[in-house]
View 1 (cartoon, rainbow, N blue to C red):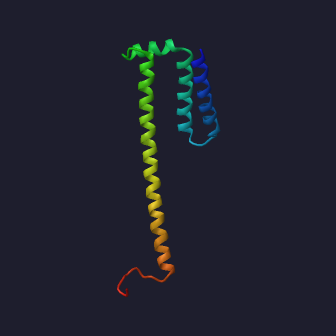
View 2: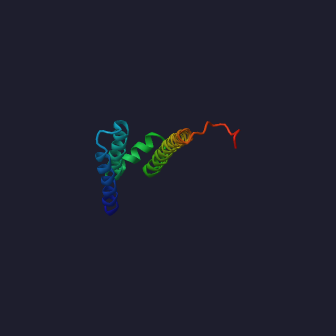
View 3: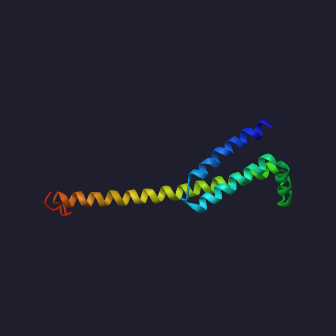
Length: 115
C-alpha cells in the first residue's frame, strides 16, 4: 500500500506537468496523459496487468510494465536525439550566417588574395 501511494504521488507530479503544458503539443500531451492514466491503473489494479500480460504471452504483469517502459524510453530517447540534431543543424546555420554577415560588415570579400 505504501508503494502504491508513493508511485501515485510520482504520477500525480507527472499529471500536473502534463496539465501545465496547456494547449501546446496536443499529441504529446494526450500521449503523456494516456501513459499517466495507464500508470494509475497498473498501480492500483495490478491484477489487470497480469491478465493483460497473459493475453499477449508474457508471464507476469510486472514484466509487461517493464517491457512497455523500455519501449517508451527508447522512443523518447530517439525523439530527443532527433530534436538535438535539428537544433545543432540550426545553430550551425546561424553561426555560418553570422560569420558571413560579419565578413560583409568588415569589408571582406571572401577571397584571400590580398593576405
